[in-house]
Length: 364
Image (tube, rainbow, N blue to C red):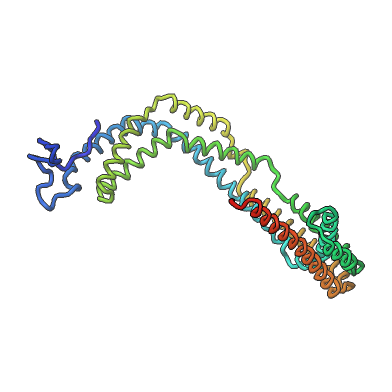
């Protein structure tokens, strides 16, 4: 039975031309009347109707399938909790890697070795630009002279800077070896993937099942009934949600093909995972594994960090850091000036091109 919303007036005669209602019988007969009081009996009828339909169609389906779906839910929850341990363990191992590359040992070593790479890159940029200027339309005698005058300066103090090469290579080698070793400390176990597959199947079986649909119906019914009783839901919202709930209840057919497919899926899932608690790894085992992996990870990081510290301590005293810093600074200034000269020629070219365009197109 569908209950239509109650109008404030039951009109007997409508004069359309004046758009007014005449000879109407008001439901509200005093200033104390309200929506909460006026349609109570009609709302009660709707709740009774819904309650009967749910008791006859929805509740029996829930009772008949509850045990199966609870088993699926328990497996889903257990696999989810185990996957949380895996996720937390993997995040911890990854955090170890990130922290290792930023620890004092590696940061200090890279700071010392970094000028070597910068020195090489500055020379590559200078030579590439010089080669480009041989055929570029932006090249000028001033730029060519600047390149020739400063080429020797770009290579000065090379012997001092190249002392950094073995340090640079050692830092890169240490990083690479450490990362390769840390990559081994992962829980390579087929059963972890199996856990993820089980969890995914259980989630699909529950979220998109008719059991969930039936549960949602009963939950909404109880929410509306409590809201109506406590007057916590506005009447217009209550009527709208009741109407929608009527449609959902009427649409729920416990013997439909969809319901049968859902149960078949659940039956297959339970059959496939009947030995789930015997064959899957335990939470304690997972925690123990990741504790050991984390310990090995930290030990490896400490080993590579200490080795690098020792190497830097033995080799860095032979470096003249002032000469290296001034060399890099000189290179940077030469390249910056070269870039500015080229950019100035480009600007002249674009400005002249624009003037020529205006001259040839005065009406544009």
